[in-house]
Image: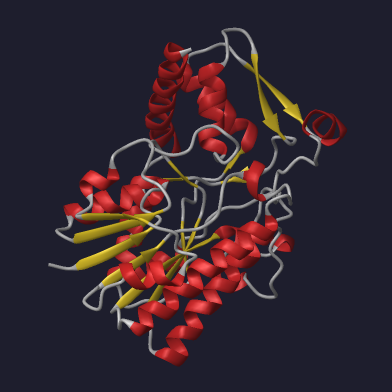
Amino acid sequence: MKKALVCGAGGFIGGHLVKYLKTKGYWVRGVDLKYNEFHPVEKFADDFVIGDLRDPTVVSSIIDEDMDEIYQLAADMGGAGFVFTGENDADIMHNSALININVAYEAVNKKVKRVFYSSSACMYPEHNQLDPDNPNCVEDSAYPANPDSEYGWEKLFSERLFLSFMRNKGLEVRIARYHNIFGPYGTWEGGREKAPAAFCRKVAEAKQGSQIEVWGPGTQTRSFLYVDECVEATYRLMQSNFTGPVNIGSEEMIAINKFAEMAIDISGKDLSIYNIDGKDFEKKYGHKCPIGVNGRNSDNTLYKEKIGWCVSQPLIEGMRETYKWINQQVELKNEVK
């Protein structure tokens, strides 16, 4: 039986990954600052540790010498309202970098067979994502480096960290650049939620005939990958002989306003969209509108070539499942009031 550690198991992707690895027959230990607030991952994991991975003594205590695989997903992160305002840059860089340094060091120390690191499409250069219709997110376009956020810079640094540990210390690594992973059992309110969850929540909360707020002009483009396909793609990469970095995402690009309209259509409500940007946004929220780059879309050519598999689920199918779950959360919250 293979033995795996999932760092960030109390989070969205990490929680789904724990459950997936159990279906593959793994013994799984999860670790996080908290339990997953939406489903009891600790009941699926064989062992679940509440611990701060910024503390090297904690990292040393949870990585065993007979560990086959480590999935390092733990990070200080959130959606645009958390990452792109600039107010959390120091914490993002400090906390995530410390976690990655500790995990890489201890994985070498304990002779762990293989480590997966979850990087992000946010590390791609801003200058390649100015055209919303033709963004360039091919893996070898990463340099010259120019991420549009400190979150992206930290992800790029940590890619290089793990690759340097592979070159100098013999640590076998696999690196994926995630593109906007979404689905149920994740953060859906409070400022750290990402666009799919935010739109589902806004639509679920909206009264018939009203409007929902969409940040920015709505012409900016993105692609979104459903979490079930993300964890399968992650597992397939981990079992392969390819180091990466490689994109894990969908190639189904959509404009943000169209994406919001999709959530509205799924709900069956009669709602309109109000785009807020510029001075109106600053007046309401006290900072510039955090919309990120103009365009971003996964290019899966390299993954298909090296792994021989590709994601296939249409965006709307994942959004139906996500809206259903978030609508239930909104209804439960309203019942408590």
